[in-house]
Length: 296
Length: 64
Image (cartoon, rainbow over all chains, first blue to last red; front, side, top):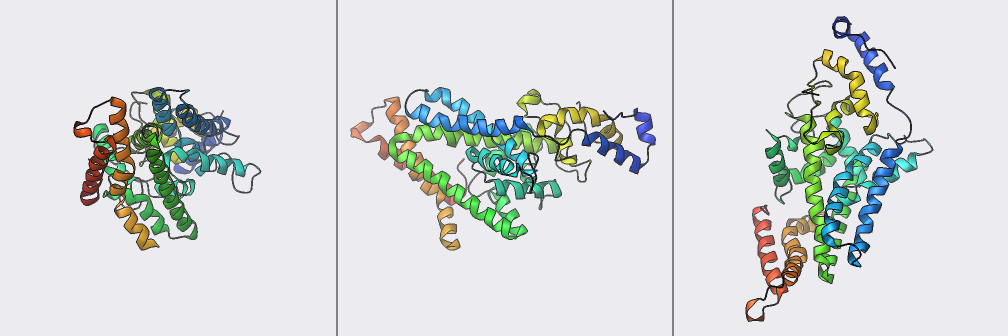
């Protein structure tokens, strides 16, 4: 492990030396295959898919399947997020197919196509907290309850938030972004077609409790913990100011590791499961930089 | 194509009200075992509620 000097020494270091030390510490946490995230992404999808035949055949009661499906949707984003940052494997590497497989499959319950998530997420990193250019800027809110209310308002048919990702893809305007836009359209139409077909074949309640309602709860959870909480108050800009560390009332697992999201914004290729350790190793440096580390 | 899809998504709340909420309300009414007056079918009630709700959401841009 790279030794980090005391805070007095850190404050006396020049910018170049501090940058070098920070990078050396961070580098220790990169690399390797994040098997946990791969198993999480593919296993989570398998569990969610299995709920359909299990409930339709009466093996599993719907009241038991509903919380599982809700958890599945809440869990569906982060494995794809690892793939978006090519943490499983980079283009040209032998396991790049696995990276893309996890990326494409894990967000199916969320009805968020991988390429849409990837391209818009890169824009979020590049323009974090920018009210126009950050596609996630709409989740900014004064407090936790307003964040939940905003998330619900964000999904109303006439809300500006509905168009945020589409606008971002249009702004990018690349052939890749155009394809992603078509994928978003196809995914949305397929999702609605499945809901309608289920409803008109006598399975509306199953569709509602396995997909429609879990998706709304899951999106609210994801926007709260992955978007609002780590970027609150959403006004800072720049590498050390646009994201914070925070202590969550529901702990590290309950907030899916987002307490340490500042590490992800600084070093996006550190796997999610290593961000807590990376945070504690980097903390004195982040403190010396004046980052918002709240009570963590 | 873009124009047709734009139009389709503009009226999507109405379609959602009729295509999903209507049958969902009907299924809930049936499971709850509520006897509706004058022999009204649960699906009819579901379609009226889903259609009106979806129509209002289409016009106002808000479900809630």
